[in-house]
Length: 102
Image (cartoon, rainbow, N blue to C red; front, side):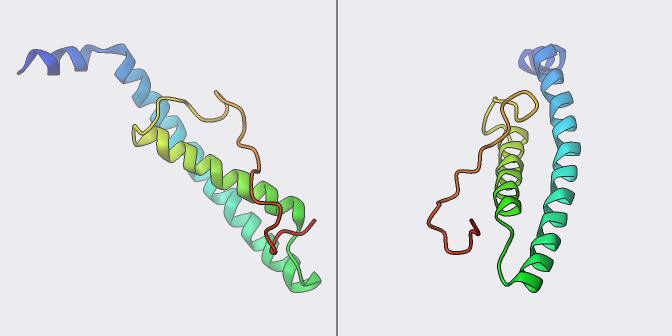
């Protein structure tokens, strides 16, 4: 076995990262479920009113951004841990989007 491997296996930081990855994998599943509920709600709202709910649109966008942040963390594209260790993603969708209900 190489010395690098032995060092990496004994590294507390890599094991801590693995623990956070497991936590965020669970949160990913929760966020995915919430996003599905928002999608169903939006469909029902659009079916009855003819347009999506503006608050749900913004929240759905931020949940999507949260899922993206989790994906970046668990794939080692960033070391920044997502919410609750960072602020919740803001809705930065373009205000001129014709699908957004104000």
